[in-house]
Image 1 (tube, rainbow, N blue to C red):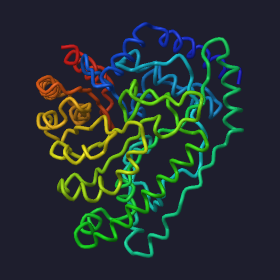
Image 2: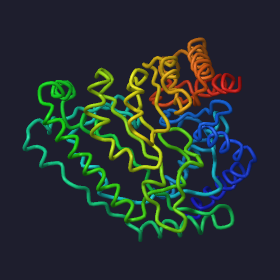
Image 3: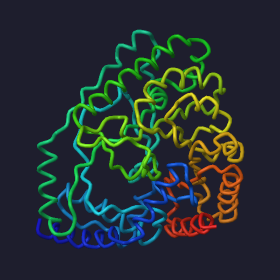
Image 4: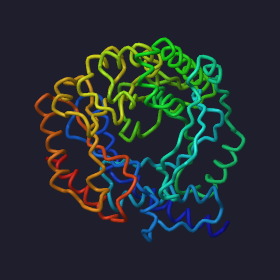
Length: 407
């Protein structure tokens, strides 16, 4: 334990030095302006990275023996590695965040699956899912969550870290940010091809399924509010900066959904028409989306031709524009009313080659499209499950993206 303590203290000192740099305030101001629809330049961020490959870097070697402290060490080393190699517009707050220990938060989802891992070290794995939601009677399987917070465990862990980082950094209990992804959950409980066919052949069954999961999720959100588990100090929402002046402050009261970002998506609707997407997603899930103060919508599904339906949800602020979307059409539709969250294609650094010309061309196209329409834009690289061991590709993507963002 003494060796673990010394390791964390040394990492914590460097972390605190980085958090104290003036650039942290500049980055927060950049994200805040962009999220408040008053953009300066596109902020840049990289997330969902292949840390199983980055673990080969000497500075990522873990030495703590205690399992809990080893997790803390991992998070510290990840931030320090980012800072040294691809900081982008990452904000480092002057604190240690300790995730709360919460059980029973499933948003109604029941998954029967087996992993088909290509690389067992990788967090990203393929799965074979069992279809458990094909009959009317299966809806009874979708039960309400019973959210439980282990405050005693949280306080013990917080006290331990406060003792370790006592004169270096404060330790804060970190709450939950809600991912309201009903359709992604359904697609893991029902065969995806059959689920799409059901939209045509069994629309009433689909509506009942969606509404049931929506109501379960809304109840879970209320439980999080009641238990004080929502967090209005999150730095990021769905791999992008969350800083804004447009969220209501809870003051001295409890943090509610209206004080925080939420995010959701309907990735299975990539091949569904705008009319059907609106009918089975937006019209049914709007009450859940609008519980939050601000909302980030979308992920990999192309949304460039579906902006009109998104305008029905009053609190959407960011819209994902994936590699499969037309960024120019998206910018025209979003205008000055939303942040265009441009998702760079991860394949251009994942196939053993660094395709710099294609990366640069896509980023420039996104920036120019948004400049022409006055649309706030951000450059996001995510879903990078591998770089084939070429760790330098991440550094090179960072340098190229920052160059384009800076203009």
